[in-house]
Length: 262
Image (cartoon, rainbow, N blue to C red; front, side, top):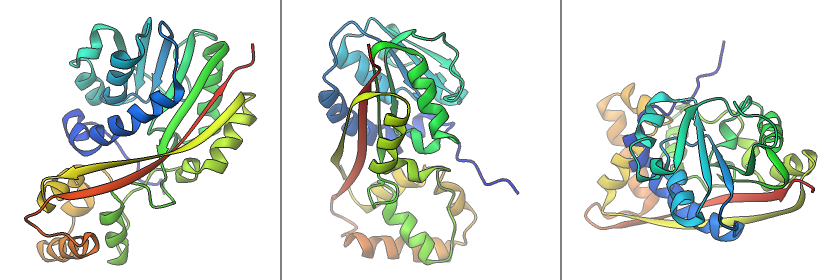
C-alpha cells in the first residue's frame, strides 16, 4: 500500500500556517547566504511564493524561476508582488524543466524532506547551476524537535494517531545534508542552525493556524468532537498556555550552502 502523500494545495491556508514561519527563517537564511545582486535564481518547491517574495525584496535578482507541483499554490504565488520579477511554473524537483547551467543560485526553502529522493533533488540543483553557482537549503529539524507543529503532532501520537509526515524527514538532519552536498560535488560547504520565534494572539490563534496543515487537518476531521477536545486540552497543557494570553513558539531549522567548483 502506498504511503499517504502530503499535499499543499491551498496557498492562503499555507500562508497562515507556514508562510509566516518560512519568511522568519528565510530572512536569516538569506543574510547568511549574503548573495551578490543580479543573480539568476531558481526557487525549487516555491509553494505559494513566501520565500520567493523574500528573494525579490532582498536580493535584487536578475531573474527568479519558482517551481512547484501544486497549481493551487502557484496561483497564490502569481498574485504576489514578487510576480513582477518572478515566474512561477509547475514542475518536479527531481526533474527540473531547465537546461544545465541555467542559473547562478538554486535554493529549496522547507522542501528537501518532501522530495522522495533527496539525492536526486540535490543533483538537479547542481545540474541547473553554472560553475561557481550556489546551492542551498533550509529545512525544519523534523527529527530534532524543531518543527513548528510539533506540539500538536506529539500529542496526536500520544493518542495513538498517525498523522501523515514528510517522506524523507531524515534529510532534515545536518549530517545527511552535509553528505548530500559533498556527495554532489559541491565545495565550500557550510551548515548552520536557524532559530526563529512567532507569537500568536492566543491559543485559539495557534490552534486555528496549525489546523490548516495537511499533516493535521485531515486527522482532526476524522476524529470525534470529544477526541478533538481532549487533544486541544493536551496541547494547551504542553504549551502551558493561558487561553486568553499570547503564545510565543520557537522553531528551529537546519541550513546548508555550497558552491559548484569553477
